Length: 465
Ligand code: NAP
Image 1 (cartoon, rainbow, N blue to C red):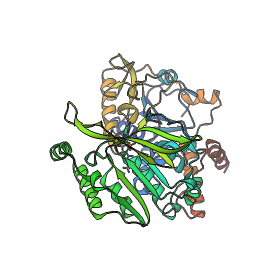
Image 2: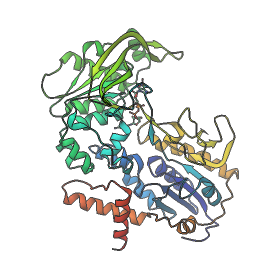
Image 3: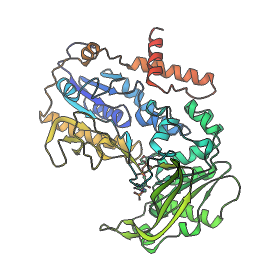
Image 4: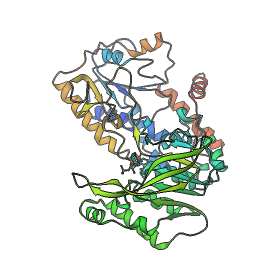
């Protein structure tokens, strides 16, 4: 399919994670006519956070790619891996060629704590660690001093914090047969980490992890989940809030945490310590290395909408630690040529339609789906509903004739002129098969190459047969 494609309804999707594929799926279902979907991904490999974010011991979650493979089999679907929008192609060039452009490029950075000492060695973001153990090319060169650490703190208690805690505490043999990066497995085998302390700024009723995740850590052989009775106790505000507004998951979390507090900590083995109502105010180091985190004690008070929010209660303490991970949420990064809401860290939009700025005019033919639309929340499946809502807006605009002109010129020609070596779906299928074969030979599910250069070299070798 090169040259002109004038008659078709032509869509570009930027990104190849869940929200990108669910957008393609909703379009394929809603537009049975001649639909062309071109998907652009800056890495050679597809699937976004399913490949680079989901933990290696959560392979069941990764099986969702079977759905994405079916979507990619649509006759009008093309994949362009190794193409960076804003470098190899500009948003304006997509806007000239397609009727609609959907940005689904996620949130690739992380939130900052904003406390003194954040730049010390041994202070990391969970995003970096997760990318590193998943062989994400952006994070292959990170170093985590696991062999010199005994106590690790994690700020935040969402599911990313749980993934990091579990990977740090589990027996490396638990990960050895997965698709974990070789460099990460080797470092985890040398790790001396014995204790991970989760630091939640609110109480046990507001913990952001799912019950399944904390229970999974408790079930790891040789790992204890320890909670002090004073951490598991609910203040009157939280008790009333849990009763009134708490979800089943939050109720199950509190029950679990109170059971752990009642059981008391076992003295041997590794442990996850769940602390609540504490917020870091300073990270302290010696000679550039992290030594301790200064914590202020918090209490909860009701915000205007009744949600318990943390405020300092005047108390404080110092906790000696060797490493710290910030797991306080992802954040979007601006894409050249596309509006960005710096306050929210997302592309400003109204119901998936990109606007020039918050409250500004709609940019015709431009849409967003997934985390760059709503922020980094929800599970993989949440992106399916989210994509459907964006596609509903796209189809309404198509029916109203509010499309980009879409000049029909094939982007392939432009990419060739610029000598961009794009990875197509056949290339990816070959690489996918190669990664599995290499994995099998090493006694694991998949062997992931951790750099773009190595991935591209392998793609080229496989092309030659
Ligand atoms: P998250 O669920 O939003 O959790 C962020 C945590 O950081 C919360 O505990 C939050 O506390 C805390 N926090 C935020 N700012 C803070 C600050 N300045 N100081 C101290 N604490 C702060 O985010 P996430 O863990 O990054 O996960 C992102 C999304 O991916 C979530 O929807 C998650 O469920 C999903 N995910 C799912 C899985 C899985 O299903 N296995 C795995 C990974 C991720 P407050 O609640 O007080 O704001």
